[in-house]
Length: 400
Ligand code: EPZ
Image (cartoon, rainbow, N blue to C red):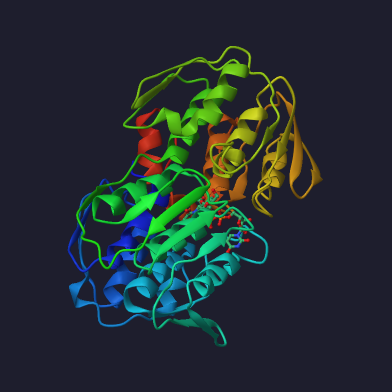
């Protein structure tokens, strides 16, 4: 499936140009619909049939983001950079989104970055207004590595005057995919996918067709699910190289697999070995695979230290795994120790966030007895049609 975290950036990127854009291979998930309704509210014409989206930004008639829509998903912040770059003004509410990250979801890097480009920031009760007579290139160092802040400032720099340098940038594959597309439409971005990105501003860029890259987190989640349920699964139209950190660990914990450029086959594991992980920005172990991996470690021989370094509160779900029978000790808010293997038992659970949601589904698939998971909106946000797809693999799962 096309990557949610690529689609949610390429849709706002359509606002950098005045031409019609086509996006292919979009996943059917709620956040995409929200992004399109945000565009429609700005007066932009959008059309979606199956996995193709057409965007015609010519009729845009305002630059203030509709708070009711923008408040419902974190990625709404991705519209700010392109609107500021193209129209020199934008207003938006503080973004919503899942409850991971200290103090909701901070946007200090975005605001600080926009200021470096010369934008004036007026903060009202619960929204921000940005204005700039003209945007000048800047040299910006990210004091925290941030995926969306890197993408936001990279898009802003595309139309700023001069050469911008972004240092300590995030290096996720979705960032390189975005830069490759923008360059194909006339932008001049060098170094996307490394920690230093240089962008030479241009007057305007064209728009064309973008095919969304496979979702590496979905690939990793399914690969872990295969290992945890001791199933042989073949995943097609994926990019194994985008989950190298996970696959290198698979080699060390006895999970046999074969791979091609765009497919991955997981075979039945022998005795699963425990392993310590520490989440890290790309190319390290992705925080979005931390919760599925922790479920896998409940079935491994021995102790595994799971260290979540990116987000606060992204280990909340382990209480529910313990209720299911897992032997997990919370050492501190960022570290747990899992002892395995333990048998898990079905329970009634609630999904706290998107990735914990799929982890609970994996736990339910290996547990004895029936599990009921509430708040599956969080799962649908990132995993298209998950119940039907798992049924196709033999799971006994149904949406109530
Ligand atoms: C992106 O979120 C992804 N979301 C997340 O996926 C992913 O978990 C995350 O990157 C890390 O890989 C999208 O791309 C839409 P960050 P992002 O900014 O960019 C702090 C999912 O499950 N920070 O890289 O919002 C922040 O608090 C989602 O699909 C600031 O301090 O994450 C965090 O501790 C969840 N100030 C750290 O940076 C800021 O202005 C990394 O967050 C921005 C972020």
